[in-house]
Amino acid sequence: MAPQTETGGTGLGHRSVTMTRTHKGTYLVTNVRGGVMSVGGGGESADFTPVELFLTAMAACSATDVDFITSRIAEPVQFDVTSEGEKVRDGAENHLTDIEVTFRVRFPQGQAGDRARERLPRAIEQTRDRLCTVSRTVQRGAPIDMHEA
View 1 (tube, one colour):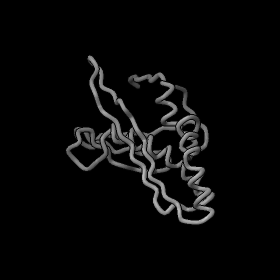
View 2 (cartoon, one colour):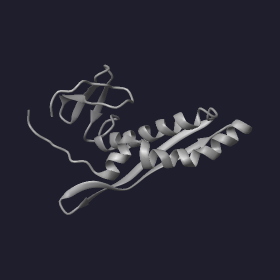
View 3 (cartoon, rainbow, N blue to C red):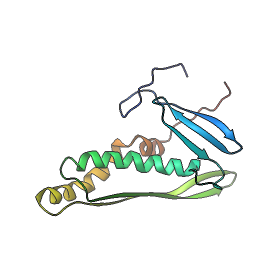
């Protein structure tokens, strides 16, 4: 892939992260804006595993869409999202099945809260069907090129 200008944020354009091994199975991930987090591949530490990060990415992407759509109408009093799936091995390959993203969103009483509650199901449909880059990529399937530099 040819070098491209990093855009960051939520707009269109190239994205990347860099991972550096800190010790066996643990890596420091850095984005172009300087954000840093530790990732643990084995699940023995409190660090997020790659599968947990995948589920987090799907939940965060969808939550951001739904939040931006509904909070214009009313500020939620509760906004929780659970992303889950079953890690399985079919033959020789590992993957997730039965992936679910569940929203628990509550709005205040009153006219604005009522409007936001009415808008919530459509916002969830929009993130699932059109807006969330992460879940749309999974649903569509995308080729992944892995190579040595």
